[in-house]
Amino acid sequence: MNDFIKQLELIAPISKETKEDLLNHLKIKKYKKGEIVNQKGRVSRRFYFIKQGMLKHYYYYNGNQFILRFFCDNRFVTISDCFLRNLPAEYSTITLEDTTIIYLEYDDLENLCKNHHSFEHFIRIIISNIAIMSIERLKTMLHLNASERYKNFITEYGHLQHRISLGDTACFLGISQVSLSRLRSKK
Image (cartoon, rainbow, N blue to C red; front, side, top):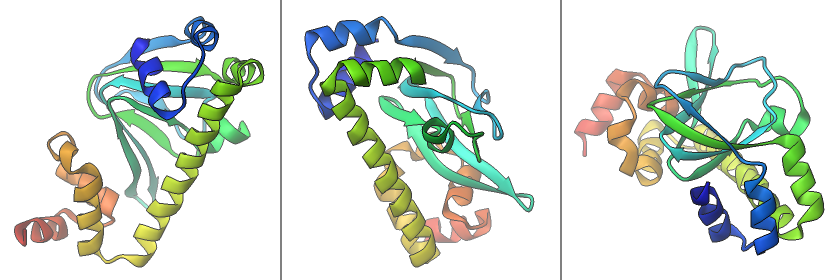
């Protein structure tokens, strides 16, 4: 639980009282590789922190898998479409390796925000970052060619390449594995 607090404080400092209240509401869950954290069509009202492991957000359309994002150790994550709107998720989230997640239920998060301005500030920063990352991801897919998308992938996820399969990398980039192999051979 202290990992959650340490990462939180890198984003926005919180008081001792806030930490104590927060620690009373945090829960932990372990997942095996390949387990679904949230299924498309289900509502998830949890705010996650990946203590250790890796997740991906993905969905299928016309028989093709599309990967929206990867998340690894020491990252905050939520299923933003349903977390913020209390609607069923439009994509699924699955573990790519054994993963330990610390989480906070939505109602607890709301109460913490009401009672602790510093925690509300932290959540505002996280939600803003989620929005910015989503816009950047969309711009990348719309405006960059495959080679440029691969360069961005290496910049953002290069340190995780050994943890992400080639198939998942290709799906994330919106290209075939053959095209990915060609891009990789040019390096």
